[in-house]
Length: 505
Image 1 (cartoon, rainbow, N blue to C red):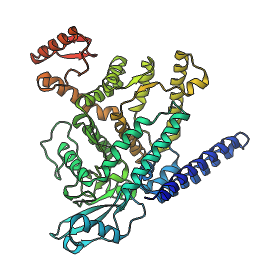
Image 2 (cartoon, one colour):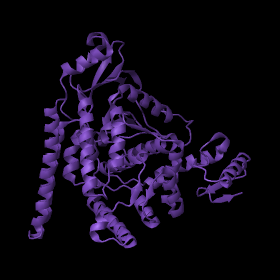
Image 3 (cartoon, rainbow, N blue to C red):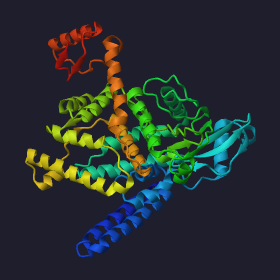
């Protein structure tokens, strides 16, 4: 990618951002004297034209911006309908690359001609996304497959877009310190390039499939917290080409087909949520991109979810996995002490002591999803909650209005939980898009509990993270830890609360 193209991409991004910004600012001024009956109509028109501007820019630039558009398209719980409706096509319906380019990449990567590789290869792709497009094909041995082919030159585009996104985040952090997105963009910069290696995606797919015990038939002998989903088998992979078994299904966002099949959308989304709860809390290895374009629904009863695209995944350490489970259960129980202890274990630090506000924010994080038609009320609730929390901070810190706007209450934010947060937001957006209400506390709780129960039952002899591994500051602390290990091995400890502060013998 030449410097001319790099400069043009940057100019286009900032130009559209400024146009949209001033459009909304102008509308805010007009709202002061406009007829109240016309205000709603004015906002709808503004959302429609600005959503079109965003869509046109993303389709033109492609690359990383498609990922952003896909994320926004799922947030029907907080975004105006115009944005989610127009950006929905980014999930799998971008303009396809030429067949000549696709065939050239396949032949170069696999070292054989198309005729040697396939008995049949569909010219029209099943889907086109930000990094690759997918074609249905028949291998030379007669097996039905799908072939995922990376776009030519997309690696340079993605890497450049990451730099531009980081520049925008730097500017936001300078202008509005309370909006510090550095942990998020840093994690994205670390993880996104991995999506460009399909060998990496192939191994991720195999690992998640093993973890979830995926198969094509329903068994009576199922492990605890079994999830009923399907994942395609990997046939072959290279850096830029991935061949998977073909699974006959309909898109998750194809409402008419789902209705024709008689699919229960609530049960479907609940099973997807259970699959992610298993990946996060039980396996500590999860797919970080659950937008609607990455799911199919099997046409054969019982119409199970088919999970696709494992390019972006996250591996959690044993200690962080336990801390996330503790955080979830503390939020479910309203236990302030346990919540702050979980935050400390995962490396999340605040600049001041605000346990009540921390609990409120966490509860909002794990709140039940809302259908799309309740998005406006959800946005209002979140805004009121944020204002309330900052008012408490202002009073505690004795800050004036200008100072509180530039105050960031988070002192340290662990990058390892960025993708975890992204997944929860995408799942919430998914349920809103499907217009169903999901109670995450009920669905995820058994998985979080099973992790802590499993660690307790295994004892410190088999689980080195049974006692959280923090630096030892004194001889007394070292002796106390050794005593805990001995008591644990003798199965004389039922539980430990804090870090630790209370023993139950």
